[in-house]
Amino acid sequence: MNALQANISGIIKSSVIDGPGNRMVIFFQACNLNCMYCHNSHTIGLCNLCGVCVQACPTQSLKIDTANKRIIHDTETCVHCDTCIKVCPENSSPFYKKMSVENLISEILEVKDFISGITVSGGEVMLQADFLVEFFTAIRKYPELKHLSILVDSNGNVGLDKWDKILDLTDGFMIDIKAYSPQIHKQITGFSNEKILDSIQYLDKKGKLDELRLVLVPDYNNGEDEINKISTLINKLSPEVRKVLIKMRKHGIRKKYTSLKEPNPEEIRKVQNRFKEAVISVFTI
Ligand code: SF4
Ligand code: SF4
Picture 1 (tube, protein in one colour):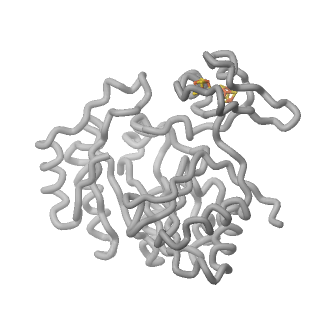
Picture 2 (cartoon, rainbow, N blue to C red):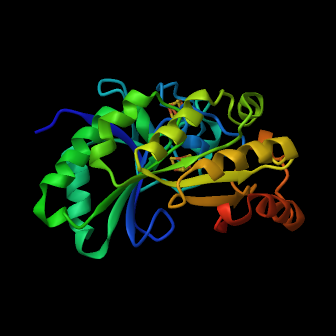
């Protein structure tokens, strides 16, 4: 029995938008960026048991379990109003769970015949890299899971040593470039991007960069100089890397960021033209 556990905010047993084929997606809790346009801001932080959500719940469905340092959630009385998530001062949630490698393997075994792979996502999954080593090693050991590919969806904001730990256990990585300029990156995410730019180039050199994505945010990362620099970086990557331009959508973002603008068709077309054949598709999220 492995003692390591990960904080898991959710599992989708079947997805066709998180990598090729039909995939099970496992979302890890906690992130080391704080993007303005995050649609899942309740996966950014870890719960510190402050009790704000317990007080705010209109159906008294939450209780603090001090002994086990967790929140107990009564699913019978919960009306799924999301008040708890909205009031959490930590950008966290009372719903994420600690799960072991064995717990996750059981979930995969239930659906193994219907999926072609596993994608781990977040939050920022690489913050739990030691767990990933154990988890991916376990998947590779099961003969009945041999057909599954393993993809990692990451923000790239970790040191190169973290990638080395899991490179040989994965089929590829999907990384976001949120901006090229460190200043613009800081405006969008709260943090600088040196590690991310290094990670993108390192994973490409290792032949493991599967997809690079840019979320287009007008007035932030769509300036001419910024797009030229991102384009230069993109054009240096292997042709096999999928390059994806994503339209920023306001749906589900935090109230304080609702003044952000979604890109209009003309703004998207301009960037597509600049990227030319480097960008092969535009997804809307
Ligand atoms: S989920 Fe958020 S509001 Fe609720 S106890 Fe944890 S930190 Fe506090
Ligand atoms: S989602 Fe459920 S637990 Fe959260 S505040 Fe609403 S009723 Fe309470």
